[in-house]
Amino acid sequence: MLQRTTRLFGLGRYFWDALREINPNDLRTELERPVTIGLFGRPGSGRHTLAQALLGQDQPDLPGRTVSINDVDGAALAAAGRLDVAFLLVDAAEPDWSAERSLAARLNASGLPYFVVATHADELPSPNQAATAIRAQFPTHPPELTAVVDPRNEGETRVRLVGPLLKAVPPIRLALAARFPTLRPAIANELIREASLANAQFALMSSLPALIPVLGFFLGGMADILVLTKNQAMLVFKLAAIYGRNVDDKMAILREIMPVIGGAFLWRTAARTAVSLAPAPVAAIPKAAIAYGGTYLVGQSARYYYERGDRPPPDVLRSFQADARHMYGQLNDTLKRRFGRPELPAGPDEPGAGAASA
Image: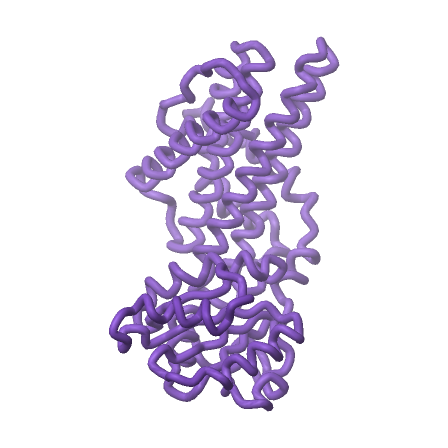
């Protein structure tokens, strides 16, 4: 127990050193950026229901901010003010969409990203008719920015729209997470996936200097420790921020989160030692996969804590670990196909082994 505690303290020091380098002002600028989402549609088209399902609110917190509900007449776009993204709702049961097409032309001219969303498809003889009508009447609109939803079904509405929304407006994701709690889980998962991939890519590249005797060993090892740990610290810092923690108090963040994610770090040495037994060209690929899985487990453990206020219980950790091992296999297969490597040894299958990265 004493040895484990000592190692955890040492890893916490690495994490703290990385955390100290993060500038909270940069993150605060992203978090506090004003954001307004506009919803346009005829009365009865489901504007308020969609706003409630997707964003958890259908009224603005402040005039001209957060959510803007509008009609589809000629003055609607001007009345909405400055927007970051818009949803144009079309009632599938309404035979004439000329007003919606006219507004779509104005949205196109403005350069504003917007979704065309059909509602009330259940009132048609076949719900598929709504998607066909959107393609026919909005032929140039990107398919990824169109959807047919029943906004009364909150779960399905979020499944259909949240992912495409975050891809359409990546610069405002942190601001969206700060303002709309319903979007936080999806944004947190996206941040975790991105950080995991970034660490996997860096672990792969940092293994290349190991092919250079002596000098490569130190370059690769130092890069692995410093960069991977800093990326994980930045991920945890962003997660803390979108869940309302004070980003100015870094020590409080460290004290709060280190017991939650510390177990993931403890597997780093064992996994890296096991991988290092393989020749450098072969070891690079499992190192990348371990970095991905480790970052994933750190991020998911932090997300769980910030959402629920408690550490993940053993069964939840096991599910995270299973996900990490699954991703290890997927990434391993992808890299082997890309680089033509021979069959690699299986990833560590001990509990938490998928988290064994810096």
